[in-house]
Image (cartoon, rainbow, N blue to C red; front, side, top):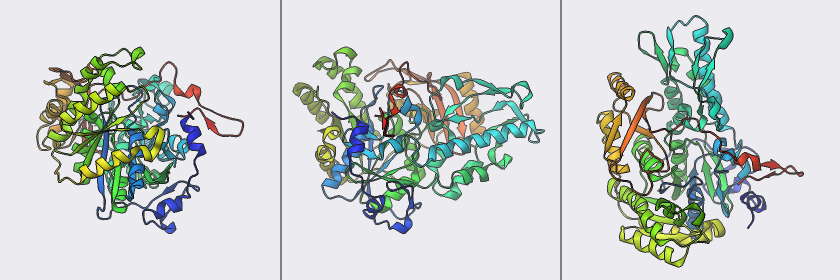
Length: 549
């Protein structure tokens, strides 16, 4: 089997103008970045297409192939004669060089040019990092230059960022030896920063600048919030993001149009591609396939409860991706024995999938199709057990092989999804936006995670009271927690019962316009593993990148 990058290098890409033409976009509307990438104008036209959301069960460390299935599904739709466009997130260099490797799909279901999308692409994440850190530089310069706003250095909330996994930057001291005002600083990964969230939730360039100005950078010594607009930073930040806000057009290995734009993490941010990209795709294609990060308790919840509210959209069908391997791990199987048939472990892990099906059907009231990402080691007995269980849970299920077969392996899934999307449905939410912050968090925990309740630390309780007193109580809530469990404890697998979620901190994102509840021991700056993927990436004698997958 060829590696992902070898498959990508072996494909014959179409000129990006030909890809754009499939969406009715002329050459004069493209801002080319070479032959195979382009920026599109911001689309705000009336919705034309149906929207399919792809999510997953609680994943393993290597993921369950959600992006791969999304790409294979779109290619399968195209093979059925549908006019379809993908709307995906951009990869972050953190996971690319960390444990997961590339995030442009896999096998014969990829978006290309694969290595360019995974690395620098059109520079969007670099621009976001620069805009974020410009605000930090202006903030610290203001304090150093006399501090006319009387900002309390001990109450600076806005953090520097870097698009890399680097645990050494979680807690640092800046301004040492008189080079500025000395204070503690804490880096976030770019995919988790507020500027990334703002770019992905903004509906126009003007809305982007407004939101940037509303970023809360800290407090003054009177206890009042200080905003980016008080530092007159939003204009320069918006200038850095003027091109980054435009969605990027690329293609799949089979030439299906793909808009890849924005990349917030779903475990520590809201996990969805940009609203502008989704608007653009929906205005151009009859069918739009999008995805939300990690399991449905994280990405799908935030897509449905936050992005859909802000954008005024809703999916017509939800696809839940799972693997036999992950279900067996949820059921307690030993990692060393995953290639062997283990029906007891599979049955013990199935409740994790059932819970996600119940949430999408009964909480959000949307049609569900389960996409089982097939692996060679899946036995007939295991396949039959999954098919029977999912159908008893009231959902359609398709074993799909898009990794090896591309769009051909996604045709059956495409047929099931197109049929399900024709059902009439109206999106419900897991919480009422007008409820107090504590109630919204408790509703997510009880309705989506299946927990018994929430325990708030004294700090979190204090910050909730302050947020509501300052007028932020009606914002959506984003819970930052582990992706590996429905709970905030990564070790509680399958479908845990009676657990309590522990909220240790609250962060008000005034520009992104949501409140973050930090649960468990989740980190806003990931670290590299013992053997990071970066060790296997290089450039060969011909100048081609190798080892990226």
